[in-house]
Image (cartoon, rainbow, N blue to C red; front, side, top):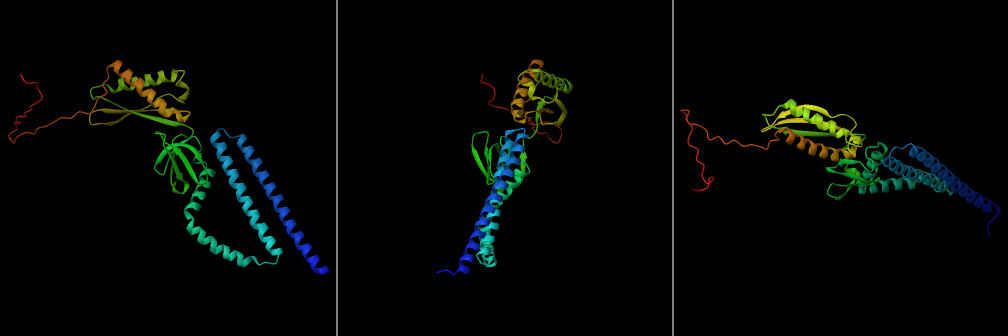
Length: 294
C-alpha cells in the first residue's frame, strides 16, 4: 500500500502534469486564434487571390511552428516534473538531428526556400514566372514545391530548393516589346508614324484598349540588320497577363497597315560574289539548270 506521503507526491506530480498540458492547450489555442485573426485581417486587405493564397500558406506554416514549439516546451517541463534529466535526451536528439539533417538536407532546403519565397512575396499563384530554367503559369505553391504549367500544357513540379533566381513576367504591369524590320529603301519616319497610328487605333478599340496603361512608346531604330532596318516600340500592359495577346494583335494590325502603305517587310537576302581576277576583270559566272530548256 502507498503511504500518505507517496500518495501526496503522486497527486502533486499528476496535477503538475495536468496543469502543464492544460496550459499548453490554452496557449496553443490562443496563439492559433491570434494567427487566424491576423491572417483574416490581412486577407481582407489583399487585392488579389494570389496574395490571399500566400497569406493562407504562411498562416498554416506559423500555426505548425507554434504547435511544435509548444509541444517541445511542454514535453520538457513534464520530463522535469517526472525527475527525468532532459540533458541526455537533448544530446541524443542533437545527434539524431544531425544525422537526419544530413539525410534530408535537400528537403529542409526546399522548406526554407519555400518559406522565404512566400514571406518575400516573390511568386504568387496565377503569375507567369521563369524558375530553374522552366517558365509557365503558377498553378500552386507550397513550402515544398512550385507547380507550373507551360504553354504546351505540360505540368512541372519545381522543388523550392532548386530555385536560385525568379523572373516574374506578370507582376504589376508588363512591357510588350515589339521589333519590326523594314527594307533599307523605306522611309524610317513614315514607318514609325504608321506604328504610332496603329498604337492609337489599338488604344481606341473597346476590346483591347482597356489593357493599355499608356500610349505606344516608340524606341526608334534599334540596329541595322543584314537585310533590314530594325525598329522597336513597346506597349505598357495592365493586367500583365494580357501582354502576349496585345502583342499578337498589334503585330497583326501593323502588318495590314504596312501592306496598305506599301512598306516592305523584307526577308533575308543572299548576294553571291564570284570574286575578281588580279587584273580587275571578273571571271565568268556560269549558271545552269535554272532556265527551262529551249
